[in-house]
Length: 259
Image (cartoon, rainbow, N blue to C red; front, side, top):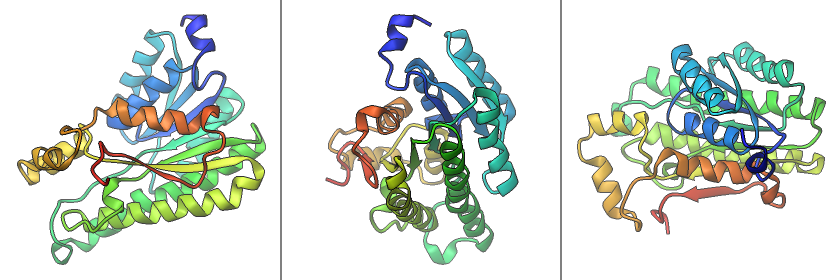
């Protein structure tokens, strides 16, 4: 990697841990963070996706590795975070991006098993990750930053994805509580709330509700969905020292949808 570019990177010399890094926003974040100078550890459930993204980063001159991780399993999450310290000697920043989705529809038609899975992955997962990340940052870098990936759908009634929106709203609350708790130690915690983003997840929603991407774009002032890297850019800034006085915020990255 070009050292001149590296020296100007948002995340130069930082060790970054990213969940849900095999595809979508997480994969875009892994590529971007590495370009911005970070050493990155990618975590997700699907090894072939992780391997592909890791190899792309290395081929571009970045430093990356991966670990298979199930966000719903406490031991798996802790082991993944610990691996960053084992590999790179420290943890500076983390992007808790991994999430799952359930079939869209009104809440009285949602399956209890789907609700439980959304809770385990989308709410308990970030909580487990934050606890492990704070411990790792505290023990190594001392100070650092965490970003949780929420959703613009957490900021309003969400009749199509009610359980998903509820878990993400709870993530906003955890984010704010963590920011207040760990701010005195110099650990910043923020969240981003993406709008419609062209990922596999929204393609799943589109397959259940044809036309939904176009409908959301029509209500969005920028009149389009985001590319995954556009969301990753916001996470990178919040994890960088350039946002050193920002903590406890939920940053909308939604093309103006909630304006």
